[in-house]
Length: 185
Image 1 (cartoon, rainbow, N blue to C red):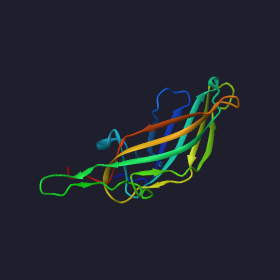
Image 2: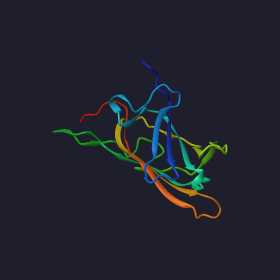
Image 3: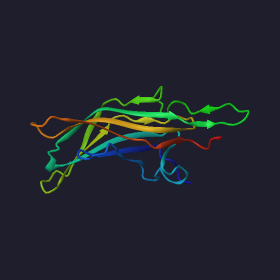
Image 4: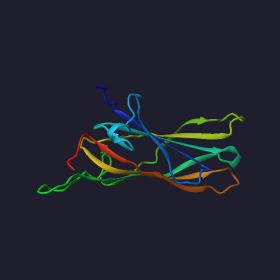
């Protein structure tokens, strides 16, 4: 059996020029041993108990459109608990409000503490300007099994130079998520 990685990275990507509001996202084990989206959890994300989740955000935009930088205005994870037990003569049980220890309820506003890690594609011959920001904290997955609808919503300010008014955009994604083993549905 492959040992469980105690760290997972959530990488979200968007294009300053895209017309949709969907974030491209990827959850990966930081040690590269496993992709948490395959097997019985395909289409969702399966966290391991006690895991630490890190976040980085990458924005790219064409230099032709004038894209110069972006600022994260707000960032929130919303978790909607799902049924874990239902049936005749048994109590109906839902998962706790969130799989993350930092969240008291179903919403958790990530502290706005990001650091620019890389400027990619800077040479003049590159058509895209890319900026990656890394969150300086992490989310800790609890030790309670459960299932949740997971949403990530982020508001960003997109800058396109000194003479252009910044643009505010909202981006999001919403897979299912789980922690631990089976449920009694």
